View 1 (cartoon, rainbow, N blue to C red):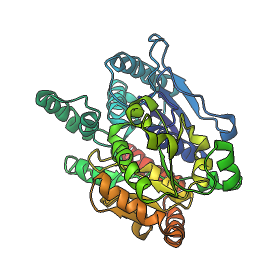
View 2 (cartoon, rainbow, N blue to C red):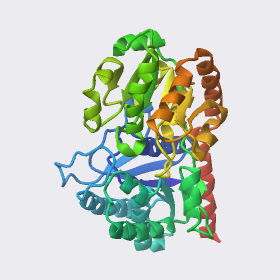
View 3 (cartoon, one colour):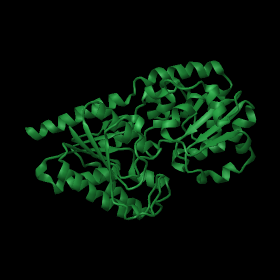
View 4 (spheres, rainbow, N blue to C red):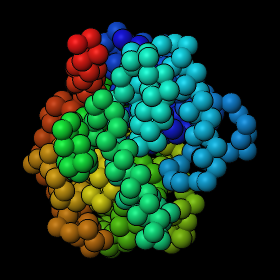
Length: 397
């Protein structure tokens, strides 16, 4: 099949949304499909070592000054999105894909517009939802007025109905969308992990030396966006509690943008008991996790997003500290160490449980590594292929 992916984001950037887009596309390509990705004018090109023929097509650089890579709303994205609709329309008209696969609510909307404009082509649309549009905007502090929340809520509910099929990255989000798509419920399409990324790596001690990390400490690692809706402030507030109790604890904070946590990094405990790695290239992630002892995912369930970082921790065989949500339980089962509530104190207690017991770290890390085999991008791609074929068969009836 010819699959046109709509990615309303600066693809590729080193964060979860982009990892889902990339890994789905790579896994689909391995199954023999031809992939084009329509995206913004900024973002990294795909590295040569991936040996992929995925064709990334970018909008024109009319907003040459726009360089924002982190998540979050920006009024200038309206112009970028208009250009992306134009690019998507051009590719759909000239390349004639079988499937338009729209990521995020914006991508689903743009795909639907192009599908309707080119209705005689009878292309099929799959909407790929990564979370709740409104809840994520609220978590970024972009929607504070109740009237605006109501307006965007109406827009979100409309977009949730679009597509010949819809998939969601978490059980919570799929359930919420399915209450709107009553005749065609959203299917859960989980994030995955590529276990081959964790093979052939240097020894942990060698990696620690290369990053200047203490060799004899228990490394507690957070990777990903350093923004509030990922729960980073809960972890940062928990760090002094953990460090006061456990002299052997040392934290790795890897991600961007660092300026979002500047008020914390100036504190002494963060300068002496933590190592900041920024930016964190996605393809360096396996090395960071290989040298670590514990992975922390401090994101709460409010945005309905999945937990891609937890899957990466699992693929590396790390025990995972997180909050007790349905999604985390489904991923981790007995491999998770769950904070009893979403507070820094409870998070510190859960981290301390693993810091104080090497045996517990080994046991739960082993469980996590075994469970990682259940969540592969290959399985996600196979499910996507079944969805594609199902809706294409409807076209021929």
